[in-house]
Image (tube, rainbow, N blue to C red; front, side, top):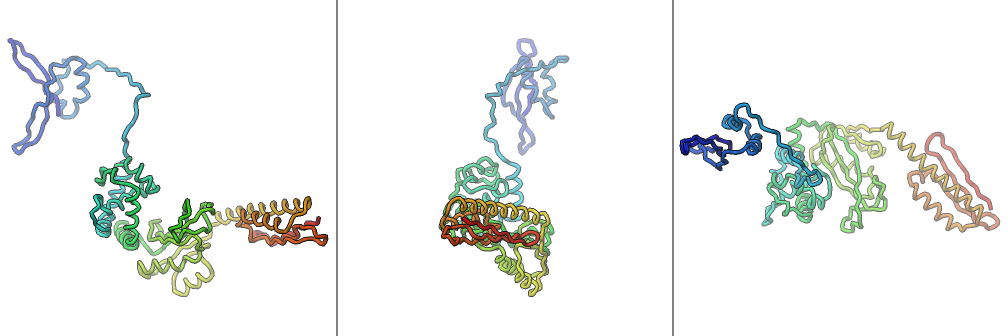
Length: 402
Protein backbone atom coordinates (compact mmCIF):
# COMPACT_ATOMS: atom_id res chain seq x y z
CA UNK A 1 0.00 0.00 0.00
CA UNK A 2 1.05 3.59 -0.51
CA UNK A 3 -0.22 7.16 -0.26
CA UNK A 4 -1.54 9.01 -3.30
CA UNK A 5 -2.04 12.74 -3.65
CA UNK A 6 -5.49 13.53 -5.13
CA UNK A 7 -7.06 16.81 -6.34
CA UNK A 8 -10.56 18.03 -7.17
CA UNK A 9 -12.20 21.27 -8.25
CA UNK A 10 -14.85 22.71 -5.99
CA UNK A 11 -16.36 26.17 -6.15
CA UNK A 12 -13.69 27.26 -8.57
CA UNK A 13 -10.83 26.22 -6.31
CA UNK A 14 -8.42 23.28 -6.53
CA UNK A 15 -8.36 21.20 -3.34
CA UNK A 16 -5.82 18.51 -2.50
CA UNK A 17 -6.24 15.49 -0.24
CA UNK A 18 -4.56 12.14 0.45
CA UNK A 19 -5.78 8.58 -0.11
CA UNK A 20 -4.43 5.26 1.11
CA UNK A 21 -4.19 3.04 -1.97
CA UNK A 22 -3.61 -0.71 -2.25
CA UNK A 23 -2.00 -2.31 -5.29
CA UNK A 24 -3.00 -5.86 -6.23
CA UNK A 25 -2.64 -8.22 -9.16
CA UNK A 26 -5.38 -9.53 -11.42
CA UNK A 27 -5.49 -11.74 -14.49
CA UNK A 28 -5.52 -8.56 -16.60
CA UNK A 29 -2.59 -6.96 -14.82
CA UNK A 30 -1.96 -4.85 -11.71
CA UNK A 31 -4.79 -2.71 -10.36
CA UNK A 32 -5.19 -0.19 -7.52
CA UNK A 33 -8.04 0.51 -5.18
CA UNK A 34 -8.57 3.14 -2.52
CA UNK A 35 -8.57 1.73 0.99
CA UNK A 36 -9.27 4.99 2.82
CA UNK A 37 -9.43 8.75 2.17
CA UNK A 38 -7.22 10.58 4.66
CA UNK A 39 -8.23 14.16 3.94
CA UNK A 40 -5.84 17.08 3.65
CA UNK A 41 -3.73 16.00 6.72
CA UNK A 42 -2.34 18.61 9.05
CA UNK A 43 1.33 18.88 10.09
CA UNK A 44 1.03 16.22 12.81
CA UNK A 45 -0.68 13.88 10.44
CA UNK A 46 2.09 14.30 7.88
CA UNK A 47 4.72 13.62 10.57
CA UNK A 48 2.97 10.39 11.53
CA UNK A 49 2.88 9.21 7.90
CA UNK A 50 6.44 10.22 7.02
CA UNK A 51 8.10 6.96 8.29
CA UNK A 52 5.91 5.01 5.86
CA UNK A 53 7.15 6.99 2.85
CA UNK A 54 9.83 4.55 1.83
CA UNK A 55 10.87 2.43 -1.12
CA UNK A 56 9.08 2.76 -4.45
CA UNK A 57 6.05 4.32 -2.76
CA UNK A 58 8.15 7.39 -1.90
CA UNK A 59 7.71 8.56 -5.51
CA UNK A 60 3.99 8.84 -4.89
CA UNK A 61 4.52 10.51 -1.50
CA UNK A 62 6.93 13.30 -2.36
CA UNK A 63 4.19 15.89 -1.85
CA UNK A 64 3.76 15.10 1.84
CA UNK A 65 5.64 18.33 2.55
CA UNK A 66 5.59 21.63 0.76
CA UNK A 67 8.82 22.81 -0.91
CA UNK A 68 11.31 23.85 1.77
CA UNK A 69 9.17 22.37 4.54
CA UNK A 70 10.82 19.82 6.83
CA UNK A 71 8.96 17.72 9.40
CA UNK A 72 9.26 18.78 12.98
CA UNK A 73 10.60 16.06 15.31
CA UNK A 74 7.95 14.49 17.45
CA UNK A 75 8.95 13.57 20.99
CA UNK A 76 7.13 10.90 22.97
CA UNK A 77 7.58 10.10 26.65
CA UNK A 78 7.68 6.39 27.48
CA UNK A 79 7.21 4.95 30.98
CA UNK A 80 9.77 2.16 30.98
CA UNK A 81 8.25 0.53 34.07
CA UNK A 82 5.12 -0.19 32.03
CA UNK A 83 6.94 -1.63 28.99
CA UNK A 84 7.21 -5.42 28.81
CA UNK A 85 7.87 -8.09 26.23
CA UNK A 86 5.16 -10.69 25.79
CA UNK A 87 4.81 -13.97 23.92
CA UNK A 88 8.41 -14.21 22.76
CA UNK A 89 9.27 -17.29 20.74
CA UNK A 90 12.54 -19.16 20.27
CA UNK A 91 12.97 -19.48 16.53
CA UNK A 92 16.57 -20.06 15.44
CA UNK A 93 17.24 -23.40 17.15
CA UNK A 94 13.87 -25.00 16.32
CA UNK A 95 14.05 -23.82 12.69
CA UNK A 96 17.55 -25.25 12.28
CA UNK A 97 16.45 -28.48 13.97
CA UNK A 98 13.52 -28.96 11.60
CA UNK A 99 15.84 -28.29 8.66
CA UNK A 100 18.30 -30.93 9.91
CA UNK A 101 15.52 -33.48 10.35
CA UNK A 102 14.48 -32.85 6.77
CA UNK A 103 18.02 -33.15 5.41
CA UNK A 104 18.59 -36.36 7.36
CA UNK A 105 15.19 -37.67 6.24
CA UNK A 106 14.30 -38.40 9.85
CA UNK A 107 10.76 -37.10 9.43
CA UNK A 108 10.20 -39.47 6.53
CA UNK A 109 11.61 -42.37 8.56
CA UNK A 110 9.34 -41.60 11.51
CA UNK A 111 6.27 -41.32 9.30
CA UNK A 112 7.03 -44.71 7.77
CA UNK A 113 8.10 -46.56 10.92
CA UNK A 114 5.66 -45.33 13.57
CA UNK A 115 2.08 -46.57 13.62
CA UNK A 116 -0.82 -44.51 12.30
CA UNK A 117 -3.91 -44.62 14.48
CA UNK A 118 -6.94 -42.46 15.19
CA UNK A 119 -4.94 -39.99 17.28
CA UNK A 120 -5.35 -36.38 16.21
CA UNK A 121 -1.59 -35.77 16.31
CA UNK A 122 0.52 -38.45 14.54
CA UNK A 123 3.13 -40.28 16.59
CA UNK A 124 5.76 -39.21 14.07
CA UNK A 125 5.11 -35.56 14.98
CA UNK A 126 5.35 -36.31 18.70
CA UNK A 127 8.64 -38.14 18.15
CA UNK A 128 9.96 -35.17 16.17
CA UNK A 129 9.09 -32.89 19.10
CA UNK A 130 11.09 -35.17 21.40
CA UNK A 131 14.11 -35.05 19.11
CA UNK A 132 13.97 -31.27 18.71
CA UNK A 133 13.56 -30.81 22.45
CA UNK A 134 16.73 -32.84 23.08
CA UNK A 135 18.56 -30.76 20.47
CA UNK A 136 17.45 -27.27 21.52
CA UNK A 137 16.93 -27.56 25.28
CA UNK A 138 17.72 -30.97 26.83
CA UNK A 139 15.28 -31.47 29.67
CA UNK A 140 12.51 -33.76 30.85
CA UNK A 141 9.41 -34.54 28.83
CA UNK A 142 7.38 -32.73 31.47
CA UNK A 143 9.31 -29.49 30.96
CA UNK A 144 9.05 -29.82 27.18
CA UNK A 145 5.28 -30.20 27.42
CA UNK A 146 4.57 -27.55 30.06
CA UNK A 147 7.12 -24.87 29.21
CA UNK A 148 9.54 -25.18 26.31
CA UNK A 149 7.30 -26.24 23.43
CA UNK A 150 4.85 -23.37 23.70
CA UNK A 151 7.70 -20.84 24.05
CA UNK A 152 9.32 -22.04 20.82
CA UNK A 153 8.33 -21.58 17.19
CA UNK A 154 7.59 -25.31 16.77
CA UNK A 155 3.79 -24.95 16.96
CA UNK A 156 4.02 -22.92 13.75
CA UNK A 157 6.89 -24.90 12.16
CA UNK A 158 5.32 -28.32 12.77
CA UNK A 159 1.66 -27.32 12.75
CA UNK A 160 1.03 -28.97 16.13
CA UNK A 161 -0.78 -26.66 18.58
CA UNK A 162 0.76 -26.34 22.04
CA UNK A 163 -2.53 -27.46 23.62
CA UNK A 164 -2.11 -30.87 21.93
CA UNK A 165 1.31 -31.57 23.47
CA UNK A 166 1.41 -33.08 26.96
CA UNK A 167 3.87 -35.22 28.89
CA UNK A 168 1.69 -38.34 28.66
CA UNK A 169 1.74 -38.34 24.85
CA UNK A 170 5.47 -37.64 24.81
CA UNK A 171 6.15 -40.62 27.08
CA UNK A 172 3.93 -42.82 24.91
CA UNK A 173 5.81 -41.62 21.84
CA UNK A 174 9.02 -42.92 23.44
CA UNK A 175 7.36 -46.32 23.83
CA UNK A 176 6.45 -46.33 20.12
CA UNK A 177 9.94 -45.20 19.13
CA UNK A 178 11.98 -47.70 21.17
CA UNK A 179 11.35 -50.79 18.99
CA UNK A 180 12.85 -48.90 16.01
CA UNK A 181 16.07 -47.88 17.79
CA UNK A 182 18.41 -50.09 15.74
CA UNK A 183 16.70 -49.23 12.44
CA UNK A 184 16.90 -45.51 13.23
CA UNK A 185 20.59 -45.80 14.12
CA UNK A 186 21.26 -47.56 10.81
CA UNK A 187 19.30 -44.90 8.92
CA UNK A 188 21.24 -42.05 10.53
CA UNK A 189 24.55 -43.80 9.92
CA UNK A 190 23.79 -44.09 6.20
CA UNK A 191 22.51 -40.52 5.83
CA UNK A 192 25.38 -38.98 7.80
CA UNK A 193 27.87 -41.00 5.79
CA UNK A 194 26.48 -39.63 2.52
CA UNK A 195 26.03 -36.03 3.64
CA UNK A 196 29.29 -35.53 5.53
CA UNK A 197 31.56 -38.31 4.21
CA UNK A 198 31.86 -39.74 7.73
CA UNK A 199 34.51 -42.42 8.18
CA UNK A 200 33.80 -45.37 10.47
CA UNK A 201 37.31 -46.82 10.55
CA UNK A 202 37.97 -45.53 14.08
CA UNK A 203 35.40 -45.79 16.88
CA UNK A 204 35.57 -44.42 20.43
CA UNK A 205 33.76 -46.21 23.24
CA UNK A 206 33.00 -45.13 26.79
CA UNK A 207 30.42 -45.59 29.55
CA UNK A 208 28.56 -43.08 31.67
CA UNK A 209 25.60 -43.27 34.04
CA UNK A 210 22.43 -41.42 34.99
CA UNK A 211 20.45 -41.79 38.19
CA UNK A 212 16.77 -41.79 39.16
CA UNK A 213 15.02 -39.89 41.93
CA UNK A 214 12.73 -42.45 43.56
CA UNK A 215 12.58 -46.22 43.83
CA UNK A 216 12.32 -46.95 40.07
CA UNK A 217 10.63 -50.20 41.05
CA UNK A 218 9.27 -50.77 37.55
CA UNK A 219 12.71 -50.70 35.91
CA UNK A 220 14.77 -53.88 36.51
CA UNK A 221 17.88 -52.20 35.08
CA UNK A 222 17.77 -49.47 37.73
CA UNK A 223 20.27 -50.69 40.31
CA UNK A 224 22.73 -49.16 42.74
CA UNK A 225 26.32 -49.13 41.54
CA UNK A 226 29.33 -46.87 41.06
CA UNK A 227 27.82 -43.40 40.68
CA UNK A 228 29.69 -40.86 38.58
CA UNK A 229 27.23 -38.27 39.87
CA UNK A 230 28.15 -38.99 43.51
CA UNK A 231 24.60 -40.17 44.18
CA UNK A 232 25.17 -43.60 45.65
CA UNK A 233 21.82 -43.23 47.42
CA UNK A 234 19.96 -43.41 44.10
CA UNK A 235 19.42 -46.21 41.62
CA UNK A 236 20.97 -45.71 38.21
CA UNK A 237 21.53 -47.17 34.76
CA UNK A 238 24.73 -47.28 32.71
CA UNK A 239 24.79 -45.82 29.20
CA UNK A 240 27.36 -47.17 26.75
CA UNK A 241 28.05 -44.90 23.77
CA UNK A 242 30.03 -45.46 20.55
CA UNK A 243 31.04 -42.40 18.50
CA UNK A 244 33.11 -41.73 15.39
CA UNK A 245 36.39 -39.82 15.36
CA UNK A 246 34.35 -36.63 14.74
CA UNK A 247 32.23 -37.33 17.82
CA UNK A 248 29.07 -38.32 15.93
CA UNK A 249 27.10 -41.06 17.73
CA UNK A 250 27.02 -44.44 16.03
CA UNK A 251 25.08 -46.41 18.61
CA UNK A 252 24.31 -46.82 22.28
CA UNK A 253 23.18 -49.50 24.70
CA UNK A 254 21.65 -49.41 28.19
CA UNK A 255 23.03 -51.63 30.94
CA UNK A 256 22.01 -52.28 34.52
CA UNK A 257 23.25 -49.72 37.02
CA UNK A 258 25.27 -52.27 39.00
CA UNK A 259 27.13 -53.66 35.99
CA UNK A 260 30.89 -53.20 35.91
CA UNK A 261 32.11 -51.17 32.95
CA UNK A 262 34.71 -53.79 32.05
CA UNK A 263 32.03 -56.43 31.41
CA UNK A 264 30.35 -54.36 28.66
CA UNK A 265 33.16 -54.28 26.08
CA UNK A 266 32.64 -57.62 24.33
CA UNK A 267 28.87 -57.10 24.11
CA UNK A 268 29.26 -53.62 22.60
CA UNK A 269 31.84 -54.72 20.01
CA UNK A 270 29.72 -57.68 18.92
CA UNK A 271 26.56 -55.53 18.81
CA UNK A 272 28.18 -52.93 16.55
CA UNK A 273 29.59 -55.64 14.27
CA UNK A 274 26.25 -57.38 14.06
CA UNK A 275 24.47 -54.12 13.26
CA UNK A 276 26.97 -52.60 10.81
CA UNK A 277 29.04 -55.58 9.74
CA UNK A 278 32.58 -56.70 10.58
CA UNK A 279 35.09 -54.19 9.21
CA UNK A 280 38.75 -53.36 9.59
CA UNK A 281 38.24 -50.70 12.24
CA UNK A 282 40.16 -49.51 15.28
CA UNK A 283 38.58 -49.33 18.73
CA UNK A 284 39.74 -46.49 20.99
CA UNK A 285 39.18 -47.49 24.62
CA UNK A 286 39.73 -46.04 28.05
CA UNK A 287 42.24 -48.19 29.93
CA UNK A 288 39.72 -48.63 32.74
CA UNK A 289 37.31 -50.43 30.38
CA UNK A 290 39.74 -53.16 29.36
CA UNK A 291 41.15 -56.13 31.25
CA UNK A 292 43.93 -58.52 30.21
CA UNK A 293 41.29 -61.01 29.12
CA UNK A 294 39.71 -58.40 26.86
CA UNK A 295 43.04 -57.62 25.24
CA UNK A 296 43.52 -61.31 24.51
CA UNK A 297 39.96 -61.54 23.15
CA UNK A 298 40.49 -58.55 20.83
CA UNK A 299 43.77 -59.97 19.53
CA UNK A 300 42.35 -63.46 19.04
CA UNK A 301 39.65 -62.14 16.70
CA UNK A 302 41.95 -59.81 14.79
CA UNK A 303 40.43 -56.61 16.16
CA UNK A 304 42.67 -53.58 16.43
CA UNK A 305 42.56 -51.29 19.42
CA UNK A 306 44.16 -48.29 21.13
CA UNK A 307 44.21 -48.01 24.93
CA UNK A 308 44.25 -44.44 26.20
CA UNK A 309 45.88 -43.29 29.41
CA UNK A 310 45.62 -39.63 30.37
CA UNK A 311 48.61 -38.24 32.28
CA UNK A 312 46.49 -35.42 33.69
CA UNK A 313 43.77 -37.87 34.72
CA UNK A 314 46.37 -40.06 36.43
CA UNK A 315 47.66 -37.13 38.46
CA UNK A 316 44.11 -36.18 39.42
CA UNK A 317 43.25 -39.73 40.50
CA UNK A 318 46.43 -39.94 42.57
CA UNK A 319 45.48 -36.76 44.38
CA UNK A 320 41.95 -38.07 44.98
CA UNK A 321 43.18 -41.38 46.35
CA UNK A 322 45.71 -39.60 48.55
CA UNK A 323 42.95 -37.42 49.98
CA UNK A 324 40.69 -40.40 50.78
CA UNK A 325 43.66 -42.29 52.18
CA UNK A 326 44.54 -39.46 54.55
CA UNK A 327 40.93 -39.22 55.72
CA UNK A 328 41.00 -42.88 56.72
CA UNK A 329 44.31 -42.53 58.53
CA UNK A 330 43.05 -39.49 60.44
CA UNK A 331 39.80 -41.26 61.32
CA UNK A 332 41.56 -44.40 62.55
CA UNK A 333 43.88 -42.36 64.70
CA UNK A 334 40.86 -40.64 66.25
CA UNK A 335 39.25 -44.02 66.96
CA UNK A 336 42.50 -45.24 68.55
CA UNK A 337 42.67 -42.19 70.82
CA UNK A 338 39.07 -42.68 71.93
CA UNK A 339 39.93 -46.28 72.92
CA UNK A 340 42.69 -44.97 75.17
CA UNK A 341 40.24 -42.71 77.00
CA UNK A 342 37.38 -45.17 77.42
CA UNK A 343 36.96 -48.91 76.96
CA UNK A 344 34.68 -49.78 74.04
CA UNK A 345 33.24 -53.04 72.78
CA UNK A 346 34.71 -54.59 69.62
CA UNK A 347 31.29 -54.29 67.95
CA UNK A 348 31.13 -50.53 68.55
CA UNK A 349 34.67 -50.05 67.26
CA UNK A 350 33.98 -52.23 64.20
CA UNK A 351 30.88 -50.16 63.37
CA UNK A 352 32.86 -46.93 63.58
CA UNK A 353 35.59 -48.34 61.36
CA UNK A 354 32.99 -49.61 58.86
CA UNK A 355 31.35 -46.21 58.58
CA UNK A 356 34.75 -44.56 58.11
CA UNK A 357 35.75 -46.95 55.31
CA UNK A 358 32.33 -46.61 53.67
CA UNK A 359 32.65 -42.83 53.46
CA UNK A 360 36.05 -43.20 51.80
CA UNK A 361 35.48 -46.31 49.70
CA UNK A 362 38.07 -45.43 47.02
CA UNK A 363 40.94 -45.99 49.46
CA UNK A 364 39.28 -48.57 51.73
CA UNK A 365 41.08 -51.48 50.02
CA UNK A 366 44.42 -50.11 51.19
CA UNK A 367 43.62 -50.86 54.82
CA UNK A 368 43.25 -54.01 56.86
CA UNK A 369 41.77 -53.38 60.31
CA UNK A 370 41.72 -55.90 63.17
CA UNK A 371 39.83 -55.27 66.42
CA UNK A 372 40.91 -57.32 69.47
CA UNK A 373 40.91 -57.15 73.28
CA UNK A 374 44.11 -56.84 75.34
CA UNK A 375 45.30 -59.34 78.00
CA UNK A 376 43.50 -57.41 80.75
CA UNK A 377 40.19 -57.86 79.01
CA UNK A 378 39.86 -54.22 77.99
CA UNK A 379 38.70 -53.63 74.42
CA UNK A 380 40.98 -51.82 72.03
CA UNK A 381 41.81 -51.16 68.41
CA UNK A 382 44.79 -53.43 68.17
CA UNK A 383 46.20 -53.32 64.65
CA UNK A 384 45.67 -51.21 61.58
CA UNK A 385 47.74 -52.31 58.61
CA UNK A 386 47.95 -49.79 55.79
CA UNK A 387 49.76 -50.38 52.51
CA UNK A 388 50.14 -47.20 50.45
CA UNK A 389 49.12 -47.46 46.80
CA UNK A 390 51.42 -44.69 45.51
CA UNK A 391 55.18 -44.68 45.69
CA UNK A 392 57.08 -47.44 47.50
CA UNK A 393 54.80 -49.77 49.49
CA UNK A 394 55.03 -49.12 53.20
CA UNK A 395 53.37 -50.60 56.28
CA UNK A 396 51.98 -48.63 59.19
CA UNK A 397 50.98 -50.04 62.55
CA UNK A 398 48.66 -48.30 64.98
CA UNK A 399 48.59 -50.08 68.30
CA UNK A 400 46.58 -48.96 71.33
CA UNK A 401 47.03 -50.35 74.82
CA UNK A 402 44.72 -49.34 77.62
